[in-house]
Image: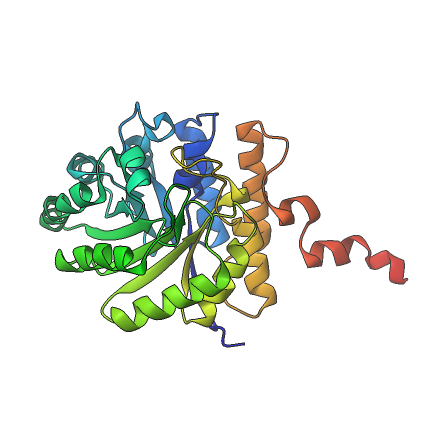
Length: 311
């Protein structure tokens, strides 16, 4: 198998995870989870989003959380922004990196941002200029580049137009986000091969929701194509409020366990991720999380539990 020796993971539970939960955590609780994520070894963390509090109340205190965290050496903290107002809020609270978003699905973009993809793209320039003037980094993401519950398969040409819009305003770090969980491995491989060849100046993140149990297979397909940066979420929590039947991202502990067994370096301690995910489960008042490792333990956990059987 043509797999990388190391990958970089971004933990998105504090944003993508919590935005779809009924229980709204306090800043103190979020900070406790953040510390667990940091101590587990994640060097890229998505702290929250600067969206309207009425639209996504779970993210209303992202500004306060950023101020609580402060500047950290060696860790990239990022947040999602929907518009220029979001960029301004990010600047005001000391956020150093923001991520724009547009959906390749017209209906999803209307539901999520109340604008067409074209209207969203038209607003990119002001956001980029504001970020650059404040000295903060800016990246972009494309939701549903693979398929949508409304339109079905998304033409690659639609995705290309959004990529080119990002590149035109100077954004070269782009995330392909399977928010609907409809992507499948051969499609993922083909898309990754296409964007790498068509846009060599860009760098890529992959973001897979595990709605139909294919996120891990999709990550494997992406790695086969040479991709090395992926999002994941504690306990597999999350989803988009505007996507029918949405589920969470691939579980961070499941992904780290898989990569470790595969000999792929992450720099992340799976046991510490497990512990933090369990703390999050208790905070959310959930009986269980969407994580195989949380339910069954790691391979090492299983062997440790049965080591006396060999005596």
